Amino acid sequence: MFNEQHLHFFEQIKTPFYYYDLDLLKKTITAIRTESERYNYHVHYALKANTDKKILQELMLAGFGADCVSGNEVKCALNNGFANNKVVFAGVGKSDDEINFALSNDIFCFNCESIQELEVVNALAGNLNTKARIALRINPNVNANTHKYITTGLEENKFGINPYEFDTILEKLKHCPNLQLIGLHFHIGSQITDLTPFKNLCTRVNEIQAWFNQKGHHLENINVGGGLGVNYKEPDTELIPDFAAYFKIFNDFLELRPGQQVHFELGRAIVAQCGNLISKVLYIKNGINTNFAILDAGMTELIRPALYQAYHKIENLSKKNNITKVARYDVVGPICESSDCFGKAVYLPETHRGDVFVIRTAGAYGEVMTSQYNLRKKNKAVYSDELK
Ligand code: LLP
Image (cartoon, rainbow, N blue to C red; front, side, top):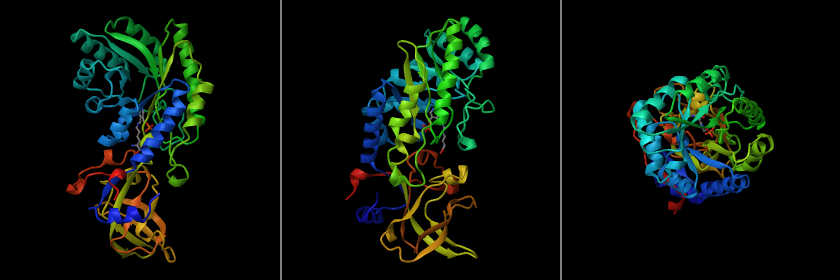
């Protein structure tokens, strides 16, 4: 994916910075639209994955809705042109201010996660003399077989309402005149590459829907969340995830009632591959059993390896065509933490100070999770349309 032209371009820019390939983003968007529109599915972009302005612009123009998890994400979606009637708002801890803001902007739906939240949204909507559309976020107890920090749909997780609470919820809703129940919401986790958990989710949704129907509730909207994973190991073999197979699973296994609308909240699968962290080697240092390649980017720019032991492919772009001599490196950052390591025992062409490194598949949960630890400053993102 990266060539000499990229190298010369990157060499002139102060590192570290995020580089976004807008052409790849556009192709990914086209693939999603082609595959989701054939079933009339609604796709909401999960803003938490990346809130870069140019990226949001493309997604908004493509007609996607917005999946938000904070009042500021709702604000960001609206400021960037997403339609208020396509904004969904989830999260276990919505504050009163956040709820009021979303109510006054008449968003499409609150995904409510607890009985107490229902009471609060009802009261706040009452104060504003309005009615909130809500979906119940249900904990489906489906194992996503992914890293434990990004599994969300198990009983032990803090997210969602458990089935044993359903009777109480329906009772409660009878006394909430300012709530309108319009759907059910699910999300089982993130970076799911085997589609079986999604099939299992469909089965659970079918059972749960049947329960609600039996109690006389017809739910217009089924929101199955996000979670489709990407190929971190070999990004170039799969720059665009297999959206055809993904949406087909839901078409094959979800039992819909007439008129029911299906919603998705995809984040990572949309933006991960179009973003890369570009960095330069500051120093090479020999260790006892290994060499260290010390980059000018660290866990402050990309925390996923330190936080989730996540793998990101690392490339030495300066030596891409010169792989006669290979050596083993621990690729680390400059931050004063031992966990500030992008990869251990990585085989790379012999590396020198000043070489340009690309850390791949960093478009999702990369730039949005940067921090100012060690008083680090952030450089501006760079885009493929600036490539000279
Ligand atoms: N909907 C809900 C309710 C969510 O909690 C999430 C992600 C999504 C949608 C979007 O999931 P995606 O399609 O991106 O998998 N920082 C972690 C990922 C955290 C995901 C949180 N929730 C990481 O870097 O892997």
